[in-house]
Amino acid sequence: MASPRWLPLESNPEFVSCLGMKPTWQFGDVYGLDPELLSMVPRPVCAVLLLFPVTEKYEAFKQEEEERLKEQPQEVSPDVYFIKQTIGNACGTIGLIHAVANNQARLEFEPDSPLKKFLEQTSKMTPEERAVLLEKDESIRVIHESRAQEGQTEAPSLDDKVNLHFIAFVNVGGHLYELDGRKPFPVVHGKTSEDTLLEDAVGVCKVFMARDPQEVRFTIIALSKESF
Image 1 (tube, one colour):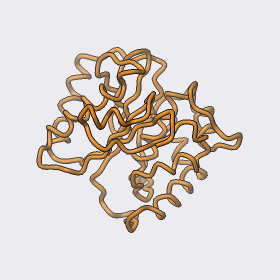
Image 2 (cartoon, one colour; image 1 turned 180 degrees about the vertical axis):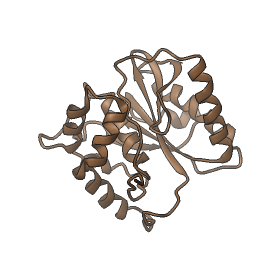
Image 3 (cartoon, helix red, strand yellow; image 1 turned 60 degrees about the vertical axis):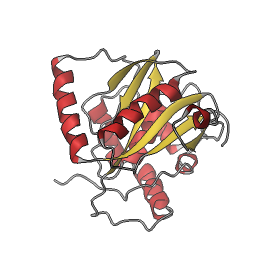
């Protein structure tokens, strides 16, 4: 049986409000990586999303990293919320779920929020079980696809091959976690804090960029306390 596919979603900060998250925290673009531009991002930042091109170089690195971490496993906090991606083109929604799920104590939701309902239903599940439930969640799928069709450019079809991918960076227990539903587990990138999360995540993003120096298709989005 083929895996389900959704319409590709652009970097659309309004999407999260449609899922029932109140605007006390908002997503906004990070316009540059030098200290002066980073200082313009409202603080505190509780999550960072990276949109990047999936290239041959990246896929080779991903395979090597996975083999290395299986041989030398990292210690991952049981408090990290991680969901596998089994739906084609759903990485934008998966990244958003990772960002929000690992910051639920800070964020506020509408009473009928489909995202809050999903997080409550899946709080004790494995990453694979969460993925299965998301496949069946019609309310999140409908919102995802309606926002995809409203994107800034003409939405591709379900069958179009999209080689851009969203991942999330969050602080759980003072450690920086990379959460990518295409990977078998979270990746730990050392220590971080509420004050340094943006800079620490950007440091990892720079490694992604250096891996493909000819590429320019990178977008960084921060989830910040105050509106942009």
